[in-house]
Length: 540
Image (cartoon, rainbow, N blue to C red; front, side):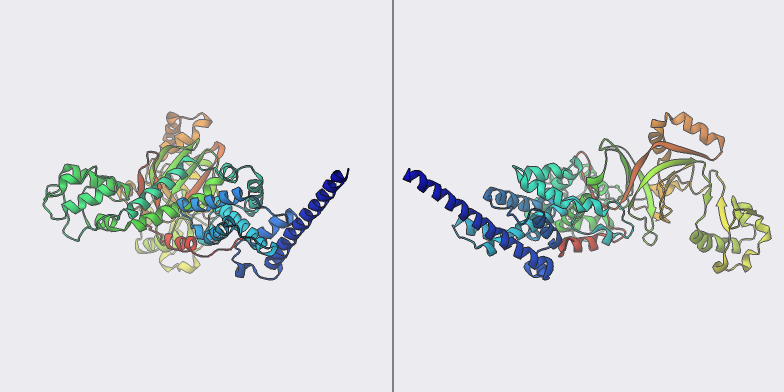
């Protein structure tokens, strides 16, 4: 009986000790939370997501979350793996966490106050990592004033994802389930690994300046050109060219492949633009792929299975069905000083045989000077003049030479026809920027490699193919479209269901077959994002 009583007393004492220890842990966490919440201590302690960290512990009444060493190991693995996504593990307290893990493995003990600091650091690391993996590190709204892809409600549930991960049997499996990566993202990730390996292996050789080099011409740079193309897989084997004096057909084809992948004219000629692209270092391409992954994190998580996407930097439009590209075409986008904005819209309807209501800026800056210089301008151009109320005006009644641009009160409308600036069809996704996709009679522009020529709208090379794809759910086919066009009448056709359209700007892309493409940063948008991706951050 005495032994039973002794055991009972021991259990009571042990329970009391455990309760006291738990209280000490919780009080330590509470005090640490209050320091970052109310005392402005977050920046000094290196906590990036102070409000979210505080909210996490307040929602669990300051109970510890990281008493399981295996869970900390899983977090460490996630942090290390962030490097493969183009993120910096240092942003997630990698060094500090590793030092504490070594201390734990060595048997070192922590006071409740020390453990509280460790707790908050671990949680801050997971919250920051989850947030960056779901929404990106660089704030897209800070990069694009037109950004409208996500709302604050989506970002507010970061804690829900973190709480589920911390409470799951496998932290890594829970994060992977809640932040799924599609095939496109995985291809970007693989391309980044490939180019990082190229850099680790010594990169590629620089090719010296020299005259333009074409097939059949001799040049001492041929062996170096072959080595350069072999490094990135554009040429199978550089060895046969070790002592070559001239460019042959195989080397020309390899150069064409390189040019096609880099948004250059694929003519197989080593000219200045191609030489510049060849000599950009691997680090430049690595940075482009890191930025592509960051831009992917901005948008891919909130997408459905079907959408249209325009890559402004790549001058292409794609139709995606069930997350697979089913159609693509070349496009013309805005000039560097009239940039096509980045935003998301809903394709709602098409207009066949559209008239063109000339924007005020174009009417006053481009057309008005022509009209003032040519007395018969309206006789040779198919335009109507309307007043602000929309009533037609006889252009002969206006004294155009005396009309100042600052007092312009008219609307020019170009009638439908073969010369109409919008061509045969336009694709409308209502937006505040007055941007849309459309046909164009200026077909020659599609043959150029960098197609930044418009006032901001997107001209499509094969618009009737796009119209047919979009109207299939309506029961339309190409003959039906041709009949409408032949009528010459303006016709509006609503899509059976609105379709998301994304206007994006990516300077790196990977095809389904793994082919990596790079494009010149025509709008100069990469450096600010790179700076934000590599800089400090705070999460509200």
